Length: 334
Image 1 (cartoon, rainbow, N blue to C red):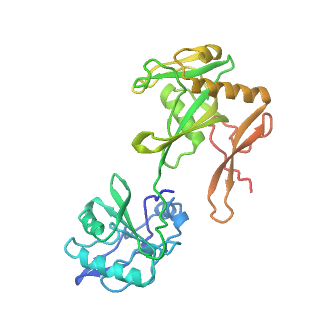
Image 2 (cartoon, rainbow, N blue to C red):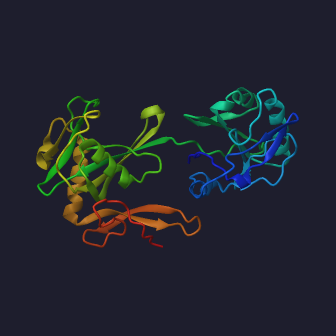
Image 3 (tube, rainbow, N blue to C red):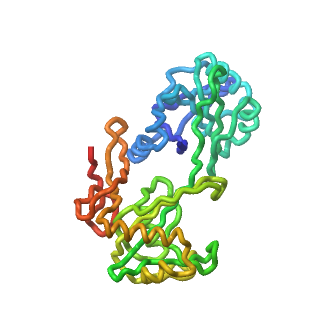
């Protein structure tokens, strides 16, 4: 489970003092309704259920508390000079240990990078980083092992099996393919906060300019030792074409065409795994089944989920909009 960008409402912010210097912890004096909405919908906030810390001793960081009795300090909310930081950190740690807090998180932005060596010297470890910040943590309880979830360890990609009414498959040959000149299905990595179905539709349009809508999940491929040492999850979606005129993306794609399915299944430049994706989809069609996508609402968290399950072809889809966009409908099944 990953920790997303921490954004905290103005009402949770406070004033701390560091060596007699008033340090105002603030995000913005004015916050729009959209900003408030983004905070409420924050991917990290709904899981950790951040709440305000009612009080903290003078000269300590305040932070916000999560539902696991941990504390998160954001350097963009609570500033401290490099000279004063060691003393404030020590007082804060003493307070958190006495209060029996558990995981302590410091989200350190580039402007406060001087904090990092002192945090490391005080037992903090790196958890994850992005372009503008690094997240460090320390587990305080000595009587139990650290119960800190690992950061994202799996990269997620999608492939799109697009077949037209003439039994032709949309195929691409990439500029930087592992096997030069090989043919594969269009696809790519899923972007943050993007549904699998939307990712497949987007990738097809970006690579070939073909518009599509969702039909069925076909297969899932799982492997390890991929980019950045992560595992790799590859989800193949069958999409129905809504247009057929190809305009390839020259930056990524060397060749793109509609290929007869039998030619594809016997082509020497097609990997056997990709052939199996097509065979699997054809078998689904023969059996009259599909793997549908429905959207449901969690009754407690009020978060929407996509649920994938087997359905008979011809049954009323539970999730796919009848419009040409191919996007998932908002009708929950509770």
